[in-house]
Length: 376
Image (cartoon, rainbow, N blue to C red; front, side):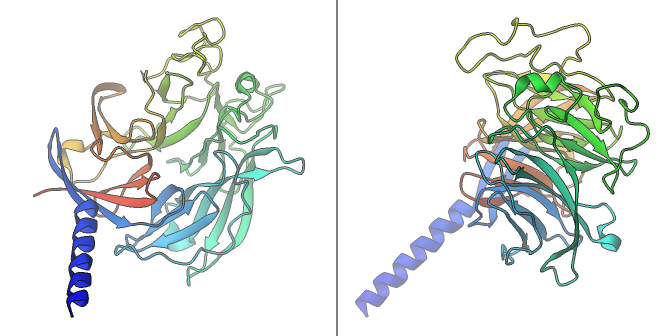
């Protein structure tokens, strides 16, 4: 009986300890927030979106696509997902449900893929989630990055539906920086395709010699976060700099964002990049930069009502920052910054706003989904 009592006491302590870790209160500029763990046991979570009923659909970089309910119960991996190039920074990356998912059940995935010679690059596919949610049917690869020159880094990648119904895919330089300025390939670019993988007829480089018609903008290093501005409908992106120089951009059609001709960072060795320039004629300067880096993951505009003071703010997952970076904006200018969850200090891979207005974050360090709500 004494042993039983001791075990029961240990159980209570463990449960209490877990609860304290899973539901904490943090002080912020606009009041206290509650941070709770919705689900744990995830393997390198990378992307998140929401089903119409509020359940989450989440990628694990190892190659799994899962549905997670509000109580943290995880489905078995959904079948029909691609064979991913799980190497370095690669794997199964972003997930996006079509805005009309209720009627068409379309799901879009970005991922890294091996070529026959074992180079690795970014691809994007579309599938239809069965009613039983066990498999993706009618899977079609809509885009493959070219040239296929990667060895395991800088894949991007996010996929977003623009207000006009076309898709933006953000890409990295695959570790081949000079190709970011080469218009005859997709390396270091934002590309724009139709929902079927075709070329929108108003893409900026259509008809230009030695230029890929999918290209929307170029001169990017590694765009791992992106969202559509809820008022202007413009694409906003955030990309990794080298040692310093993470940057937010608002990619315009046909515009050059400079990498590696200009950078607000330096080489990891400390040396200058190229000629050491930060600005150049013909290159669009960033909205803002960070040195030291925050190492950005995903980002989203806050458009819900649960946090009135955050309305219109930009929320960014910070890997090196160990925080959600909250930016207050005035039109296209950053006016203030606050870092949330610094008390936890873990790598935040993605951040999203749920149908309930709460903020959800993928904690890559501990393989869990966090839910953030105001303390009332």
